[in-house]
Amino acid sequence: EGPTPVSALIHAATMVTAGIYMIARSAPLYSRAPETLLIIALVGIATALVAALIAMVQRDIKKVLAYSTISQLGYMFVAVGVGAFGAGIFHLVTHAFFKALLFLGSGSVILALHHQQDLFKMGGLRRYLRVTFVSMWIATLAIGGAPFFSGFFSKDQILWEAYASPHGHMAFRLAGVLVAGLTALYMSRLMFLTFHGTERFKTDGAHPTPQEPSLLMTFPLMILAFFSVIAGYIGLPGYLGTNRLVEFLAPSFQWVREETMTVEHSHSEELVLTVIVVAVAALGFLAAYQLYVRDRQMADRLAQRFSFLHQTFSSKFFVDELYDSVFIQPIRKMSHSILWKGIDVGVIDGLVNGTASFLVRCSHKIKRVQSGFVRAY
Image (cartoon, rainbow, N blue to C red; front, side):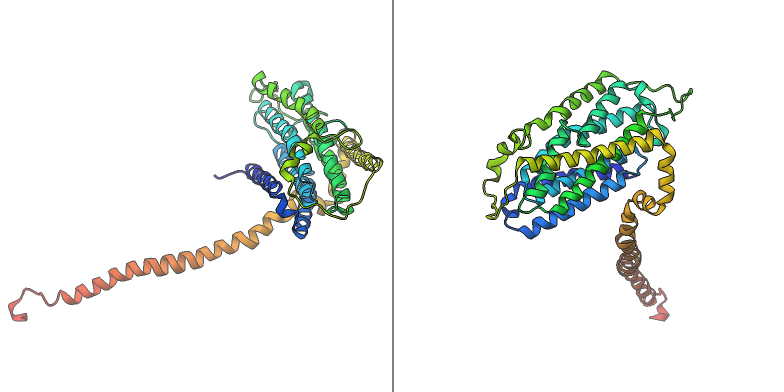
């Protein structure tokens, strides 16, 4: 049947991750092409924003995480696009732990619910999957940028570099802060719909009560939860210490071209911007709590009131439809009319069948020469 949309997204994310690594390894070249860096940063921030908006309305738990991965990869492209190559690798490292934890945690949920993936058919699972519940909340706080979790440090450095780097711009910072709020919103939505509220799953003979998977599955969750907390401490911000990961990677970037015109920024300025990011992320968490715990009808009312936006986000900005009309359908029509009917049937089959028909016609004429009657000779 071919790959599922989620597996295709994960495969694409894997390839993009390799792309980020290759850009970082080619940093001396990119640092001498500022226009290219600008394009990378623009594509990165657009990817982060669009994927976050799409993740905000998905019903499939794995699709939320898949689009979340794409959004976080957009953050990494912003980092390398503003010349902060070490910051991009830093977020790649921390993201590996809490995103792996979220995917494994979702697998635990899907297994407990007998392969159910619809968020709106879950709820109340914290009473049955305690280890999964705690570990996934740790990962959610990490990816949401909660202070002193791993994602807080790496994401904060990217947003700071988007503002303070010679290649950065305030627009990148503002869009990145918005994406941070959206990330906290859609990840909290996933957690509230999965583990909180009323139970919306079936419990009968065919669907027994959900149970926590064995230690074989929960022990990796514990390990990843531990690193989702501490992994960020290898890269402290300037007002708390030094980024040891960036220092460790410095020899790899020794040939990077440095801008001669730089602007000095104080630690207090960085701290103020960090507080703003944390505040926006906190608003995202609170908004998700209001919409999916306190007043579930509010989310439905907003979806109906802004139905066009909701449909646009649910349809993934109609990218699939656009791709189908621009690429898939023209290729199918060309394949049908030109490659198949024109070349395959008309030329190849026509040449083979025409040769056979020609030989048959010739043989009908030649066979009259050898009739077998002497009088005919």
